[in-house]
Length: 97
Image (cartoon, rainbow, N blue to C red; front, side, top):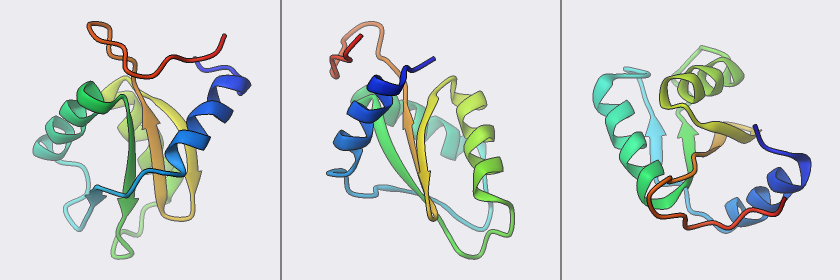
C-alpha cells in the first residue's frame, strides 16, 4: 500500500512518462498481462492507455489490472492508468517514506 507522499512522488514521475501500453478491443488477455508484468519488472512504473472502444468503466479495468498484476494504482486520469510495482531484485525508484 502506498502512502500519500509516495503517490505524489510517483504521480510526478508518471507525468513525464509516455503512454507505451494500450488495452484494446480484446480487453485483458494473458498476453497483455504478461507484457505488462514484464514492463513493471523492468520499469516499476507504467502508464496504460484505455482505448475508446472499451465500454467497461476505467476504474474497474484499473482494479482488475492491479489485482491480476499485484500492482498499486497510482492514479487514473481520463483514459490513462498509472501502475506501480516494486521490483524486489533491483529497485529502480526510491520511494519516500
